[in-house]
Length: 210
Image 1 (tube, one colour):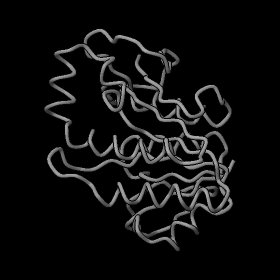
Image 2: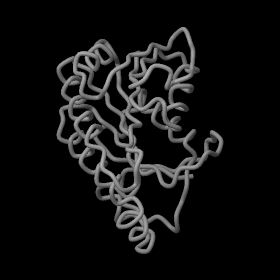
Image 3: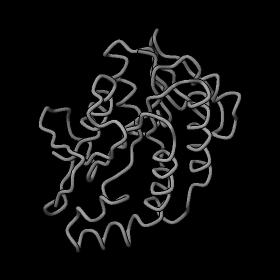
């Protein structure tokens, strides 16, 4: 498939790009700066632009089968308005270009999933430590949910740099997580890619942990 990855220079985005290329996909990565993604591959294409550059975004998205976002702000205390407006623009262009499948990386604790966490963990993580980035994700999720796209929102628990395994728990129904479960970025990337061939979670938010 032809896929577009936003946020390919981040830890999860790098793994997502590597796994997609290994699986034979044609991958376009949208980057702000040349050289921010170090992978080289015959099936890898680079489009350089900012998230408010509609012409460049259209160049990247047009003709794709699906788009992925692993975008996230780089601060715990400052909002990322460029990403918020960028997600809106991406959704609009996808609708216009007829690219329907969008897989977005969020986090457990965003949206209704905050109530799946133990009370103390919920207070510590969602109300204190990650309050600002989660607020941004909440806005982005609502933008995606209100779109006409066939979206899936991945909400992993605490991310680690562990290996790729087959031991993943996931679901879209209400649950109660015990303690502070974790999941490797490699497993998150793998799950996101699997959604290309699995419509079980179309227009649903999915919790993930190991």
